[in-house]
Amino acid sequence: MTKADPAPSSERAPAVEACPLCVLQVRFPHALRAALLLCWALLVAAVANAANPLGIRWTLSPGGRVGIPRTYEARLPEASAKEARAMFDAGTAIFIDTRDARDYKKDHIPGAVNLPMRDWQRAWSKVSASGELPKEARLLIYCYGRKCGLSTRAGKRLLEEGYRHPIILEYGWTEWNDAGYPTVEHPQGRGR
Amino acid sequence: MSAIRAVPLHRAVLRVIGIAIGATLIWASIDKLHHPDQFADAVHEYDMLPLWLMNAFALAMPGAEVVTGAALVLGVWRRAAGLLSVGLFLAFMVAIAQAQLRGLQIECGCFDVGDMTSSEASWGLFGRDAVYLLASALVWRRG
Image (cartoon, rainbow over all chains, first blue to last red; front, side, top):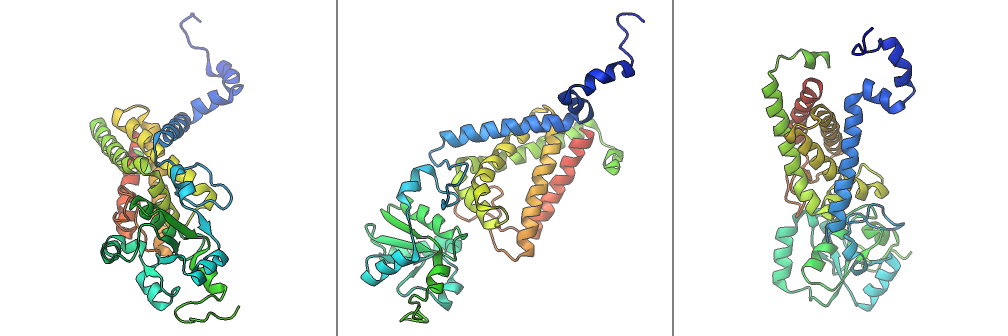
């Protein structure tokens, strides 16, 4: 055998088997490269997110909401149904219902303004033209429930529109209704 | 997969297919990279991941799209990028299919993620992604 001759595969095999990465490289070369591309993807994502003023946290803190930019977190607080009820009784907040119009029509918190996120453009042009939402007002925004992201979206949008005090109703319509608090169908509440 | 290997294709055609898929992925990633919060909202609407994972997924997905797209356009590790592309389109198809089967009326979040004005997740988009999936599989297996 000359120097240029490759070693027989039977002689090379033990060296390859001893190195797990080498095994991957030989048996699944595209999978290994795809994994390396994924590492690059995470690096690109991390750099882009860190440099972006609308960047979000990678992980949610307990009770955190999905899709809130880091810079908005302190400006978009949450309220429990009990706190919202206190504001409702004192008349210190305007309630914003971001659910679809058909659900709003079925029942809603008395006095709530319907701003359905799924029909935002049309609803917003109507509401902003009416002037019923002063910029300084405390706006209590709700949607269907905890997992619903429509109220977060509306909150961000209202901050961008220059509103100073949007607040998210933490567990939304579900918690308010389950607590038996006043609704249009039950103006006095359901006594719970 | 053996059927894909048997498809007669000129190498240049595969190259063009790879560039087309790559350009589409890069285009799809741009708005998501600019508005990660809004893409996280779109991911949230699909309601198929645990809450704690949604932000991370919304950040990682456009990163994967842009890197895979760039590799396909530049022809670097093309077959590996084809494999990743298969994974991406498979994920899109699963997301759209589960939303359709559950009757969720949500925006696609495919290209424009702001303002909820992008096209709605539908079986039509599922079909479009299936075509991209097959094309990606060709690049992976034959590239």
